Image (cartoon, helix red, strand yellow):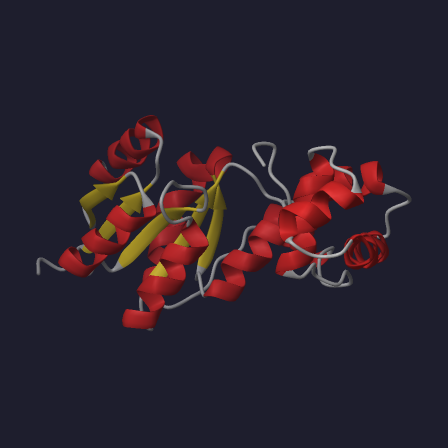
Amino acid sequence: MDGSISVLCADDHPLVRKGIAWILAKEPDMRLVAEASTGREALELFRTHRPDVTLIDLRMPEMDGVETTEAILQEVPEARIIALTSYAGDQEIFRALKAGVRGYILKEMVHTEVVRAIRMVHLGRRLVPAEVSERLSGYFPHAALSPREAEVLSFVAKGLANKEIADRLGTSEGTVRIHVQHILSKLEAADRTHAVTIALRRGILRLSS
């Protein structure tokens, strides 16, 4: 209404939200209209405020950042969303960009990049910092794991054998063995442990999995 850029910040860490609020408070052409601590809350607040730019942490409870982005863009395709995260696994970056975010900022870069990112995205531009682009460029030559392969790998990471994984998934041990072979091939991994290490580095698996 007043010509300023309205911003919604969604992050489950209060300190991050306070830091961003402090930064934006110093910008005369920006105003923080709402803060959310979960993905579901972010979606509801977006519907209420219709901000010009939305900052979304990729790892939040209830709905993660990618799911929230997809839900928002399904309702408002022109919504301008910037992904915010402390981790830059290439799989995570790829998922966020594929979901439709206009920009991607690492939390370590917030103090130097968030204002510029908001202005650029508000103008209709896209922003992927060089540090992120470098990690992303290494992703595309690799085939992505299917959802079932990622699920199998999560069980592998927990130390389960093929039979145990088969029992969990309600399938045969032979099917699980084939999934594992595909995982090793796609990740170019020497063995199961190596596959888990690669998946953690690329953001396919998380330490909490």
